[in-house]
Length: 486
Ligand SMILES: *[C@@H]1O[C@H](CO)[C@@H](O)[C@H](O)[C@H]1NC(C)=O
Ligand SMILES: *[C@@H]1O[C@H](CO)[C@@H](O)[C@H](O)[C@H]1NC(C)=O
Image 1 (cartoon, rainbow, N blue to C red):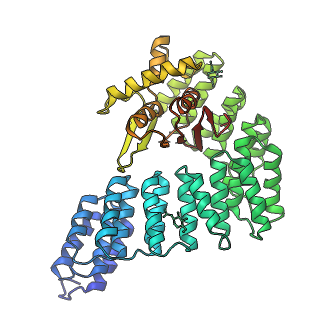
Image 2 (image 1 turned 180 degrees about the horizontal axis):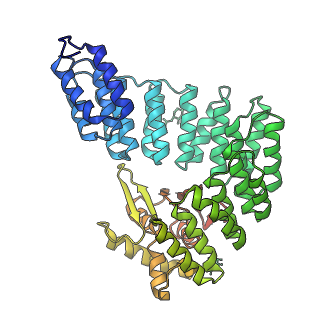
Image 3 (image 1 turned 30 degrees about the horizontal axis):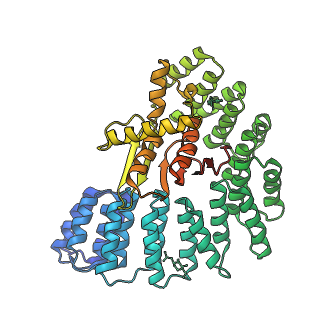
Protein backbone atom coordinates (compact mmCIF):
# COMPACT_ATOMS: atom_id res chain seq x y z
CA UNK A 1 0.00 0.00 0.00
CA UNK A 2 2.74 2.38 0.98
CA UNK A 3 4.95 1.62 -2.05
CA UNK A 4 2.04 2.30 -4.37
CA UNK A 5 1.78 5.74 -2.86
CA UNK A 6 -1.58 5.37 -1.16
CA UNK A 7 -1.66 7.12 2.20
CA UNK A 8 -3.14 5.12 5.06
CA UNK A 9 -6.05 6.80 6.77
CA UNK A 10 -7.25 6.52 10.36
CA UNK A 11 -9.17 3.34 9.58
CA UNK A 12 -6.10 1.65 8.12
CA UNK A 13 -4.21 2.50 11.28
CA UNK A 14 -6.98 1.23 13.51
CA UNK A 15 -7.10 -2.14 11.70
CA UNK A 16 -3.35 -2.54 11.99
CA UNK A 17 -3.41 -1.58 15.66
CA UNK A 18 -6.13 -4.11 16.26
CA UNK A 19 -3.91 -6.76 14.68
CA UNK A 20 -1.03 -5.73 16.95
CA UNK A 21 -3.31 -5.97 19.99
CA UNK A 22 -4.39 -9.48 19.14
CA UNK A 23 -0.78 -10.56 18.52
CA UNK A 24 0.57 -8.49 21.45
CA UNK A 25 3.08 -7.26 18.86
CA UNK A 26 4.68 -4.31 20.58
CA UNK A 27 7.51 -3.89 18.03
CA UNK A 28 5.14 -3.22 15.14
CA UNK A 29 2.89 -1.32 17.51
CA UNK A 30 5.66 1.17 18.20
CA UNK A 31 6.30 1.60 14.48
CA UNK A 32 2.59 2.22 13.96
CA UNK A 33 2.57 4.72 16.78
CA UNK A 34 5.25 6.64 14.86
CA UNK A 35 3.24 6.40 11.64
CA UNK A 36 0.10 7.65 13.40
CA UNK A 37 1.98 10.71 14.70
CA UNK A 38 3.60 11.37 11.31
CA UNK A 39 0.28 11.23 9.50
CA UNK A 40 -1.12 13.82 11.87
CA UNK A 41 -3.50 11.55 13.79
CA UNK A 42 -1.91 12.55 17.07
CA UNK A 43 -5.18 14.04 18.23
CA UNK A 44 -7.37 11.15 17.12
CA UNK A 45 -8.63 10.00 20.49
CA UNK A 46 -9.78 6.63 19.23
CA UNK A 47 -6.34 5.76 17.80
CA UNK A 48 -4.53 7.13 20.84
CA UNK A 49 -6.65 4.96 23.10
CA UNK A 50 -5.85 1.91 21.01
CA UNK A 51 -2.11 2.58 21.23
CA UNK A 52 -2.43 3.17 24.95
CA UNK A 53 -4.24 -0.12 25.35
CA UNK A 54 -1.58 -1.92 23.33
CA UNK A 55 1.20 -0.52 25.52
CA UNK A 56 -0.72 -1.50 28.62
CA UNK A 57 -1.44 -5.03 27.42
CA UNK A 58 2.21 -5.55 26.52
CA UNK A 59 3.32 -4.32 29.94
CA UNK A 60 5.00 -1.19 28.54
CA UNK A 61 3.63 0.95 31.35
CA UNK A 62 6.32 3.63 31.08
CA UNK A 63 5.45 4.22 27.41
CA UNK A 64 1.78 4.09 28.25
CA UNK A 65 2.20 6.81 30.88
CA UNK A 66 4.29 8.93 28.54
CA UNK A 67 1.56 8.78 25.95
CA UNK A 68 -1.17 9.33 28.54
CA UNK A 69 0.50 12.49 29.82
CA UNK A 70 0.97 13.85 26.30
CA UNK A 71 -2.56 13.18 25.07
CA UNK A 72 -4.33 16.44 24.23
CA UNK A 73 -7.71 14.95 25.20
CA UNK A 74 -8.69 11.97 27.28
CA UNK A 75 -12.01 10.29 27.70
CA UNK A 76 -13.38 7.69 30.06
CA UNK A 77 -11.87 4.90 27.99
CA UNK A 78 -8.43 6.47 28.35
CA UNK A 79 -8.55 6.58 32.14
CA UNK A 80 -10.16 3.21 32.30
CA UNK A 81 -7.41 1.63 30.21
CA UNK A 82 -4.54 3.02 32.25
CA UNK A 83 -6.07 2.40 35.67
CA UNK A 84 -7.04 -1.22 34.96
CA UNK A 85 -3.68 -2.01 33.38
CA UNK A 86 -1.89 -0.60 36.42
CA UNK A 87 -4.05 -2.71 38.72
CA UNK A 88 -3.48 -5.81 36.63
CA UNK A 89 0.22 -5.28 37.16
CA UNK A 90 -0.27 -4.97 40.89
CA UNK A 91 0.44 -1.24 41.00
CA UNK A 92 -2.27 -0.28 43.48
CA UNK A 93 -0.42 2.87 44.47
CA UNK A 94 -0.16 4.15 40.88
CA UNK A 95 -3.77 3.26 40.17
CA UNK A 96 -4.95 5.09 43.30
CA UNK A 97 -2.96 8.17 42.35
CA UNK A 98 -4.43 8.15 38.87
CA UNK A 99 -7.87 7.60 40.29
CA UNK A 100 -7.47 10.74 42.45
CA UNK A 101 -6.48 12.68 39.35
CA UNK A 102 -9.56 11.40 37.55
CA UNK A 103 -11.74 12.54 40.44
CA UNK A 104 -10.08 15.94 40.84
CA UNK A 105 -9.11 17.24 37.50
CA UNK A 106 -10.93 15.62 34.67
CA UNK A 107 -14.53 16.65 35.18
CA UNK A 108 -15.35 13.41 33.39
CA UNK A 109 -18.14 11.17 34.50
CA UNK A 110 -17.07 7.57 34.73
CA UNK A 111 -19.14 5.03 32.91
CA UNK A 112 -20.26 1.68 34.15
CA UNK A 113 -17.30 0.00 32.45
CA UNK A 114 -14.76 2.09 34.38
CA UNK A 115 -16.35 1.36 37.69
CA UNK A 116 -16.92 -2.34 37.06
CA UNK A 117 -13.49 -3.07 35.63
CA UNK A 118 -11.64 -1.15 38.34
CA UNK A 119 -13.69 -2.90 41.03
CA UNK A 120 -13.00 -6.31 39.49
CA UNK A 121 -9.28 -5.56 39.47
CA UNK A 122 -9.50 -4.44 43.12
CA UNK A 123 -11.16 -7.75 43.98
CA UNK A 124 -8.30 -9.75 42.44
CA UNK A 125 -5.69 -7.74 44.29
CA UNK A 126 -7.51 -7.39 47.59
CA UNK A 127 -7.23 -3.60 47.17
CA UNK A 128 -9.95 -2.75 49.66
CA UNK A 129 -9.13 0.92 50.15
CA UNK A 130 -9.18 1.73 46.46
CA UNK A 131 -12.32 -0.38 46.12
CA UNK A 132 -14.03 1.74 48.80
CA UNK A 133 -13.04 4.93 47.04
CA UNK A 134 -14.42 3.65 43.76
CA UNK A 135 -17.59 2.78 45.65
CA UNK A 136 -17.92 6.36 46.98
CA UNK A 137 -17.18 7.71 43.56
CA UNK A 138 -19.74 5.49 41.91
CA UNK A 139 -22.30 6.59 44.54
CA UNK A 140 -21.61 10.21 43.70
CA UNK A 141 -21.80 9.50 40.00
CA UNK A 142 -25.25 8.02 40.13
CA UNK A 143 -24.50 4.29 40.10
CA UNK A 144 -26.06 3.63 43.49
CA UNK A 145 -28.84 1.66 41.84
CA UNK A 146 -26.90 0.13 39.00
CA UNK A 147 -27.35 -3.61 39.36
CA UNK A 148 -24.13 -4.58 37.61
CA UNK A 149 -22.10 -2.17 39.76
CA UNK A 150 -23.78 -3.45 42.92
CA UNK A 151 -23.07 -7.08 42.01
CA UNK A 152 -19.42 -6.23 41.35
CA UNK A 153 -19.26 -4.38 44.67
CA UNK A 154 -20.56 -7.43 46.55
CA UNK A 155 -17.95 -9.60 44.89
CA UNK A 156 -15.18 -7.06 45.53
CA UNK A 157 -16.00 -6.61 49.21
CA UNK A 158 -16.33 -10.35 49.74
CA UNK A 159 -13.01 -11.08 48.01
CA UNK A 160 -11.31 -8.33 49.99
CA UNK A 161 -12.48 -9.99 53.19
CA UNK A 162 -15.09 -7.40 54.14
CA UNK A 163 -18.31 -9.39 54.33
CA UNK A 164 -20.10 -6.70 56.34
CA UNK A 165 -19.72 -4.23 53.50
CA UNK A 166 -20.74 -6.89 51.00
CA UNK A 167 -23.96 -7.58 52.90
CA UNK A 168 -24.67 -3.88 53.25
CA UNK A 169 -24.60 -3.47 49.47
CA UNK A 170 -26.65 -6.63 49.11
CA UNK A 171 -29.24 -5.50 51.68
CA UNK A 172 -29.67 -2.12 50.03
CA UNK A 173 -30.33 -3.78 46.68
CA UNK A 174 -33.65 -5.12 47.87
CA UNK A 175 -36.00 -5.68 44.96
CA UNK A 176 -33.29 -5.37 42.33
CA UNK A 177 -31.25 -8.47 43.13
CA UNK A 178 -30.43 -10.86 40.34
CA UNK A 179 -29.13 -14.41 40.56
CA UNK A 180 -25.62 -12.91 40.36
CA UNK A 181 -26.19 -10.78 43.47
CA UNK A 182 -27.40 -13.79 45.47
CA UNK A 183 -24.64 -16.02 44.16
CA UNK A 184 -21.89 -13.47 44.88
CA UNK A 185 -23.13 -13.25 48.47
CA UNK A 186 -23.43 -17.03 48.87
CA UNK A 187 -19.94 -17.61 47.43
CA UNK A 188 -18.59 -14.88 49.72
CA UNK A 189 -20.16 -16.38 52.85
CA UNK A 190 -18.86 -19.82 51.87
CA UNK A 191 -15.30 -18.58 51.40
CA UNK A 192 -15.46 -17.11 54.90
CA UNK A 193 -16.63 -20.39 56.38
CA UNK A 194 -20.08 -19.01 57.24
CA UNK A 195 -21.85 -22.07 55.90
CA UNK A 196 -25.11 -21.78 57.85
CA UNK A 197 -25.63 -18.23 56.64
CA UNK A 198 -24.84 -19.26 53.08
CA UNK A 199 -27.43 -22.02 53.26
CA UNK A 200 -30.10 -19.84 54.81
CA UNK A 201 -29.45 -17.15 52.21
CA UNK A 202 -30.07 -19.82 49.60
CA UNK A 203 -33.49 -20.51 51.16
CA UNK A 204 -34.30 -16.79 51.03
CA UNK A 205 -33.21 -16.75 47.41
CA UNK A 206 -35.64 -19.51 46.56
CA UNK A 207 -38.43 -17.81 48.54
CA UNK A 208 -37.68 -14.67 46.58
CA UNK A 209 -38.38 -16.65 43.41
CA UNK A 210 -34.86 -16.45 42.01
CA UNK A 211 -33.69 -19.55 40.15
CA UNK A 212 -30.13 -20.59 41.12
CA UNK A 213 -27.37 -21.01 38.52
CA UNK A 214 -24.13 -23.00 38.43
CA UNK A 215 -22.25 -20.36 40.46
CA UNK A 216 -24.83 -20.55 43.24
CA UNK A 217 -24.12 -24.26 43.58
CA UNK A 218 -20.37 -23.73 43.63
CA UNK A 219 -20.99 -21.47 46.62
CA UNK A 220 -23.28 -23.97 48.33
CA UNK A 221 -20.93 -26.91 47.82
CA UNK A 222 -18.00 -24.85 49.05
CA UNK A 223 -19.96 -23.90 52.13
CA UNK A 224 -20.69 -27.58 52.83
CA UNK A 225 -17.05 -28.57 52.18
CA UNK A 226 -15.72 -25.96 54.57
CA UNK A 227 -17.96 -27.11 57.38
CA UNK A 228 -18.01 -30.84 56.77
CA UNK A 229 -21.73 -30.92 55.91
CA UNK A 230 -21.52 -34.11 53.86
CA UNK A 231 -25.21 -35.00 53.60
CA UNK A 232 -26.26 -31.45 52.70
CA UNK A 233 -23.53 -31.32 50.07
CA UNK A 234 -24.63 -34.58 48.50
CA UNK A 235 -28.24 -33.38 48.44
CA UNK A 236 -27.27 -30.11 46.68
CA UNK A 237 -25.21 -31.99 44.12
CA UNK A 238 -28.18 -34.20 43.26
CA UNK A 239 -30.66 -31.37 43.34
CA UNK A 240 -28.77 -29.09 40.94
CA UNK A 241 -29.37 -31.46 38.04
CA UNK A 242 -32.67 -32.98 39.14
CA UNK A 243 -34.45 -29.76 40.14
CA UNK A 244 -32.73 -27.08 38.09
CA UNK A 245 -31.36 -28.89 35.05
CA UNK A 246 -27.81 -27.65 35.65
CA UNK A 247 -25.12 -30.01 34.36
CA UNK A 248 -22.30 -30.14 36.93
CA UNK A 249 -19.05 -28.61 35.69
CA UNK A 250 -15.54 -29.58 36.73
CA UNK A 251 -15.72 -27.05 39.59
CA UNK A 252 -18.77 -28.78 41.07
CA UNK A 253 -17.02 -32.15 40.93
CA UNK A 254 -14.00 -30.48 42.53
CA UNK A 255 -16.14 -29.23 45.41
CA UNK A 256 -17.62 -32.70 45.95
CA UNK A 257 -14.22 -34.39 46.04
CA UNK A 258 -13.04 -31.73 48.45
CA UNK A 259 -16.13 -32.20 50.63
CA UNK A 260 -15.79 -35.98 50.79
CA UNK A 261 -12.04 -36.12 51.29
CA UNK A 262 -11.92 -33.49 54.00
CA UNK A 263 -14.62 -35.31 55.86
CA UNK A 264 -12.47 -38.43 55.84
CA UNK A 265 -14.41 -40.27 53.15
CA UNK A 266 -11.32 -40.56 50.95
CA UNK A 267 -12.26 -43.95 49.51
CA UNK A 268 -15.66 -42.66 48.49
CA UNK A 269 -14.01 -39.57 47.03
CA UNK A 270 -11.71 -41.81 44.98
CA UNK A 271 -14.67 -43.81 43.65
CA UNK A 272 -16.49 -40.57 42.90
CA UNK A 273 -13.52 -39.44 40.79
CA UNK A 274 -13.38 -42.74 38.93
CA UNK A 275 -17.05 -42.41 38.01
CA UNK A 276 -16.93 -38.79 36.85
CA UNK A 277 -18.24 -38.36 33.29
CA UNK A 278 -15.59 -35.69 32.60
CA UNK A 279 -11.85 -36.12 32.85
CA UNK A 280 -10.61 -35.14 36.32
CA UNK A 281 -8.05 -32.34 36.39
CA UNK A 282 -5.21 -31.53 38.76
CA UNK A 283 -7.48 -29.64 41.15
CA UNK A 284 -9.64 -32.72 41.65
CA UNK A 285 -6.71 -35.03 42.40
CA UNK A 286 -5.17 -32.28 44.51
CA UNK A 287 -8.33 -32.14 46.64
CA UNK A 288 -8.12 -35.89 47.19
CA UNK A 289 -4.45 -35.59 48.10
CA UNK A 290 -5.28 -32.88 50.66
CA UNK A 291 -7.84 -35.18 52.25
CA UNK A 292 -5.32 -38.03 52.33
CA UNK A 293 -2.99 -35.81 54.29
CA UNK A 294 -5.63 -34.90 56.85
CA UNK A 295 -6.68 -38.50 57.26
CA UNK A 296 -3.23 -40.08 56.82
CA UNK A 297 -4.09 -42.34 53.89
CA UNK A 298 -0.73 -43.01 52.28
CA UNK A 299 -1.95 -45.53 49.68
CA UNK A 300 -4.51 -43.23 48.10
CA UNK A 301 -2.12 -40.29 48.32
CA UNK A 302 0.31 -42.27 46.17
CA UNK A 303 -2.46 -42.92 43.65
CA UNK A 304 -3.33 -39.24 43.53
CA UNK A 305 0.28 -38.19 43.02
CA UNK A 306 0.60 -40.53 40.06
CA UNK A 307 -2.16 -38.65 38.29
CA UNK A 308 -0.87 -35.30 39.42
CA UNK A 309 2.64 -35.95 38.15
CA UNK A 310 1.10 -36.23 34.68
CA UNK A 311 -1.58 -33.53 34.92
CA UNK A 312 0.37 -30.86 36.75
CA UNK A 313 3.99 -32.03 36.77
CA UNK A 314 5.65 -28.79 37.84
CA UNK A 315 3.40 -27.91 40.76
CA UNK A 316 5.60 -28.31 43.81
CA UNK A 317 2.67 -28.03 46.21
CA UNK A 318 1.56 -31.60 45.59
CA UNK A 319 4.98 -33.14 46.15
CA UNK A 320 5.28 -31.16 49.35
CA UNK A 321 1.96 -32.49 50.60
CA UNK A 322 3.13 -36.02 49.82
CA UNK A 323 6.41 -35.52 51.63
CA UNK A 324 4.42 -34.09 54.55
CA UNK A 325 2.35 -37.24 54.64
CA UNK A 326 5.49 -39.40 54.71
CA UNK A 327 7.11 -37.18 57.32
CA UNK A 328 4.11 -37.37 59.62
CA UNK A 329 4.26 -41.14 59.32
CA UNK A 330 7.97 -41.04 60.12
CA UNK A 331 8.90 -42.48 56.71
CA UNK A 332 12.00 -40.36 56.22
CA UNK A 333 13.48 -42.42 53.39
CA UNK A 334 10.30 -41.72 51.39
CA UNK A 335 10.59 -38.01 52.19
CA UNK A 336 14.09 -38.08 50.73
CA UNK A 337 12.88 -40.01 47.70
CA UNK A 338 10.18 -37.40 46.96
CA UNK A 339 12.72 -34.60 47.32
CA UNK A 340 15.03 -36.36 44.87
CA UNK A 341 12.16 -36.91 42.47
CA UNK A 342 11.33 -33.21 42.58
CA UNK A 343 14.90 -32.36 41.80
CA UNK A 344 15.09 -34.87 38.96
CA UNK A 345 11.90 -33.53 37.41
CA UNK A 346 13.01 -29.95 37.72
CA UNK A 347 10.18 -28.98 40.08
CA UNK A 348 11.08 -25.76 41.84
CA UNK A 349 9.83 -24.96 45.29
CA UNK A 350 7.43 -22.00 45.29
CA UNK A 351 8.35 -19.89 48.24
CA UNK A 352 5.54 -18.63 50.38
CA UNK A 353 4.78 -14.92 50.26
CA UNK A 354 2.34 -12.66 52.03
CA UNK A 355 1.24 -9.19 51.02
CA UNK A 356 -0.21 -6.44 53.09
CA UNK A 357 -1.45 -3.11 51.75
CA UNK A 358 -1.18 0.01 53.90
CA UNK A 359 -3.54 2.99 53.74
CA UNK A 360 -1.32 4.84 51.29
CA UNK A 361 -1.87 2.04 48.78
CA UNK A 362 1.71 0.76 49.00
CA UNK A 363 1.88 -3.02 48.96
CA UNK A 364 4.48 -4.66 51.19
CA UNK A 365 5.46 -8.17 50.24
CA UNK A 366 7.24 -10.62 52.52
CA UNK A 367 8.72 -13.94 51.54
CA UNK A 368 9.55 -16.65 54.06
CA UNK A 369 12.82 -15.94 55.83
CA UNK A 370 12.87 -12.37 54.53
CA UNK A 371 15.44 -10.20 56.30
CA UNK A 372 15.64 -7.56 53.61
CA UNK A 373 12.75 -5.29 54.53
CA UNK A 374 13.87 -1.78 55.61
CA UNK A 375 11.97 -2.32 58.87
CA UNK A 376 13.28 -5.87 59.37
CA UNK A 377 14.79 -5.15 62.76
CA UNK A 378 11.59 -3.64 64.14
CA UNK A 379 9.55 -6.48 62.71
CA UNK A 380 11.69 -9.16 64.41
CA UNK A 381 11.58 -7.27 67.69
CA UNK A 382 7.78 -7.07 67.46
CA UNK A 383 7.64 -10.78 66.69
CA UNK A 384 9.83 -11.60 69.70
CA UNK A 385 7.52 -9.58 71.95
CA UNK A 386 4.52 -11.39 70.53
CA UNK A 387 6.10 -14.81 71.10
CA UNK A 388 6.58 -14.06 74.79
CA UNK A 389 2.91 -13.20 75.22
CA UNK A 390 1.81 -16.10 73.05
CA UNK A 391 3.80 -18.53 75.19
CA UNK A 392 2.06 -17.19 78.29
CA UNK A 393 -1.13 -18.25 76.57
CA UNK A 394 0.15 -21.73 75.83
CA UNK A 395 1.76 -21.35 72.43
CA UNK A 396 4.43 -23.88 71.49
CA UNK A 397 6.04 -23.66 68.05
CA UNK A 398 4.87 -26.69 66.06
CA UNK A 399 8.04 -27.73 64.31
CA UNK A 400 6.63 -31.04 63.09
CA UNK A 401 5.79 -29.11 59.95
CA UNK A 402 9.39 -28.29 59.09
CA UNK A 403 10.61 -30.95 56.72
CA UNK A 404 14.29 -30.21 56.91
CA UNK A 405 16.86 -32.33 58.60
CA UNK A 406 18.08 -29.58 60.93
CA UNK A 407 18.44 -28.93 64.67
CA UNK A 408 15.26 -28.25 66.63
CA UNK A 409 16.41 -24.71 67.38
CA UNK A 410 16.89 -24.03 63.67
CA UNK A 411 13.45 -25.40 62.98
CA UNK A 412 11.90 -22.93 65.39
CA UNK A 413 13.74 -20.06 63.75
CA UNK A 414 12.59 -21.32 60.39
CA UNK A 415 8.96 -21.43 61.37
CA UNK A 416 9.16 -18.02 63.08
CA UNK A 417 10.10 -16.51 59.72
CA UNK A 418 7.02 -17.63 57.79
CA UNK A 419 5.83 -14.80 55.60
CA UNK A 420 2.43 -14.27 57.26
CA UNK A 421 4.13 -13.87 60.66
CA UNK A 422 6.41 -11.20 59.21
CA UNK A 423 3.47 -9.49 57.52
CA UNK A 424 1.33 -9.44 60.66
CA UNK A 425 4.17 -8.06 62.81
CA UNK A 426 4.72 -5.38 60.19
CA UNK A 427 0.98 -4.67 60.08
CA UNK A 428 0.80 -4.21 63.86
CA UNK A 429 3.66 -1.71 63.68
CA UNK A 430 2.29 0.28 60.77
CA UNK A 431 -1.47 0.50 61.20
CA UNK A 432 -3.54 2.37 63.80
CA UNK A 433 -4.63 0.43 66.89
CA UNK A 434 -7.93 -1.31 66.52
CA UNK A 435 -7.95 -1.45 62.71
CA UNK A 436 -8.29 -4.70 60.80
CA UNK A 437 -5.14 -6.20 59.31
CA UNK A 438 -5.59 -7.78 55.88
CA UNK A 439 -3.08 -10.17 54.38
CA UNK A 440 -3.03 -12.13 51.13
CA UNK A 441 -0.99 -15.32 51.10
CA UNK A 442 -0.12 -17.39 48.02
CA UNK A 443 -0.14 -20.81 49.72
CA UNK A 444 -2.26 -22.48 52.35
CA UNK A 445 -1.73 -21.13 55.86
CA UNK A 446 0.23 -23.67 57.90
CA UNK A 447 -0.98 -25.08 61.22
CA UNK A 448 1.58 -23.20 63.24
CA UNK A 449 0.80 -19.82 61.68
CA UNK A 450 -2.88 -20.55 62.17
CA UNK A 451 -2.51 -21.05 65.93
CA UNK A 452 -0.15 -18.08 66.18
CA UNK A 453 -2.54 -15.76 64.36
CA UNK A 454 -5.43 -16.73 66.63
CA UNK A 455 -3.39 -15.74 69.66
CA UNK A 456 -2.05 -12.56 68.06
CA UNK A 457 -5.60 -11.44 67.27
CA UNK A 458 -6.48 -11.88 70.95
CA UNK A 459 -3.30 -10.23 72.27
CA UNK A 460 -3.50 -7.20 69.99
CA UNK A 461 -7.28 -6.82 70.04
CA UNK A 462 -7.21 -6.73 66.27
CA UNK A 463 -9.17 -8.54 63.62
CA UNK A 464 -6.79 -10.25 61.20
CA UNK A 465 -8.13 -11.36 57.82
CA UNK A 466 -5.97 -13.71 55.77
CA UNK A 467 -6.91 -14.72 52.25
CA UNK A 468 -4.90 -17.84 51.45
CA UNK A 469 -4.93 -19.94 48.29
CA UNK A 470 -8.30 -21.50 49.11
CA UNK A 471 -10.31 -19.35 51.43
CA UNK A 472 -10.50 -16.66 54.08
CA UNK A 473 -9.52 -16.92 57.70
CA UNK A 474 -10.87 -14.17 59.97
CA UNK A 475 -8.99 -14.27 63.26
CA UNK A 476 -10.68 -12.51 66.13
CA UNK A 477 -10.61 -12.84 69.93
CA UNK A 478 -8.48 -15.97 69.78
CA UNK A 479 -10.65 -17.84 67.28
CA UNK A 480 -10.76 -18.29 63.54
CA UNK A 481 -13.87 -18.11 61.38
CA UNK A 482 -12.92 -21.45 59.81
CA UNK A 483 -13.53 -23.19 63.13
CA UNK A 484 -10.12 -24.86 62.62
CA UNK A 485 -11.58 -26.94 59.81
CA UNK A 486 -9.71 -26.02 56.66
C1 LIG B 1 -23.10 4.41 48.88
O1 LIG B 1 -24.50 4.67 48.98
C2 LIG B 1 -25.18 3.76 49.84
C3 LIG B 1 -26.68 4.01 49.73
O2 LIG B 1 -27.00 5.35 49.97
C4 LIG B 1 -24.66 3.94 51.27
O3 LIG B 1 -25.30 3.07 52.16
C5 LIG B 1 -23.18 3.61 51.25
O4 LIG B 1 -22.62 3.78 52.55
C6 LIG B 1 -22.44 4.48 50.25
N1 LIG B 1 -21.10 3.94 50.20
C7 LIG B 1 -20.01 4.69 50.07
C8 LIG B 1 -18.71 3.99 50.12
O5 LIG B 1 -20.06 5.87 49.91
C1 LIG C 1 1.53 -29.99 64.89
O1 LIG C 1 0.96 -30.11 63.60
C2 LIG C 1 0.65 -31.43 63.22
C3 LIG C 1 0.22 -31.43 61.78
O2 LIG C 1 -0.89 -30.65 61.59
C4 LIG C 1 -0.41 -31.98 64.16
O3 LIG C 1 -0.74 -33.30 63.80
C5 LIG C 1 0.11 -31.93 65.58
O4 LIG C 1 -0.88 -32.33 66.47
C6 LIG C 1 0.59 -30.54 65.95
N1 LIG C 1 1.28 -30.57 67.21
C7 LIG C 1 1.07 -29.72 68.19
C8 LIG C 1 1.93 -29.81 69.38
O5 LIG C 1 0.20 -28.86 68.11
